[in-house]
Length: 153
Image (cartoon, rainbow, N blue to C red; front, side, top):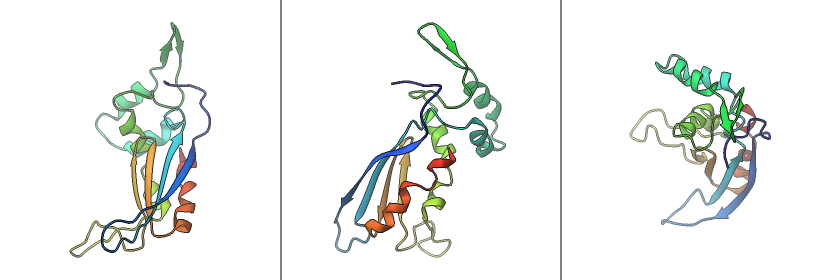
């Protein structure tokens, strides 16, 4: 594949729903498996850099994002996106998607012995680069997860 400077809008591509049952009393039986189409191509550099805040290597990341791409001997400047297949690209996409859990309605326990765990009934969102899996108690609970957060790229 590779980096496409004028990529299409980032949207989930053909999510699939699966009914799962494991353990003695499973609560999150619906699994939404989706990919973010053209996610690497459409990362907004300013949004990404704002998420980095005062990260010590922020300026280096900015230079890397603006370095451009050479394909078949032709240089193309990069105004958005990050090269897919680059070593740090999955990390940068995860930074750009920070906040997706909140948009999807994931809630965490703030204190007690289960602090950091998800609140019962709350979806669980697992993401890496342009792949995500959401575990939900109902299929209806998974349906809104197809939209929130994606348009922020």
